[in-house]
Length: 188
Image 1: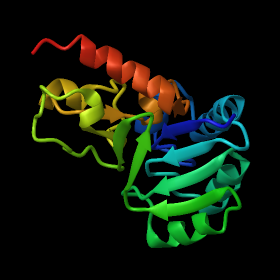
Image 2 (image 1 turned 45 degrees about the vertical axis):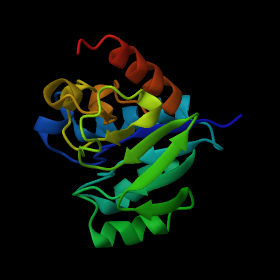
Image 3 (image 1 turned 60 degrees about the vertical axis):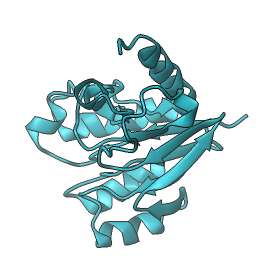
Image 4 (image 1 turned 90 degrees about the vertical axis):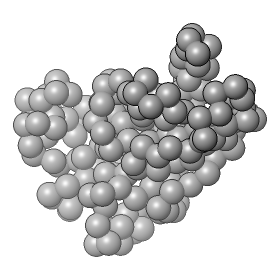
């Protein structure tokens, strides 16, 4: 049975210390290898993976090579580093199904808005159950706290970037479990 995963901000080949060092790596090559290894250990060929932007930087040829190594069927949401040229390269990858600016995902009675940037998706309707709210799954901020915006703005925003999930994609089921647990413990 296939699964659905979400992740963002792979930043393949982004050779900047401020990116790979906080993730625990000595260089971009080590980071690239670990991301591919972690990903392929978890994701199966028939799984769906929503990548919420920023697949690669700098060395596009190596970045595309690495993307083609990833298992699963990729749905890419455009990030701020996903230029028109890179989008054209992504489209040529056999494992990329589509590229969008944002997307809606309905899963087990829950409703998600998928975007690269954290996005306020509710009118602070705290009294409504989670299944009646639109939850934003996002990336961009490189936070290690998946609830950073939920804590700050009390809005249903959950961060999926690799930085918040030990450099691994997270299944939608794991994200939902995390979100439901967090929401149940909120003090209103």
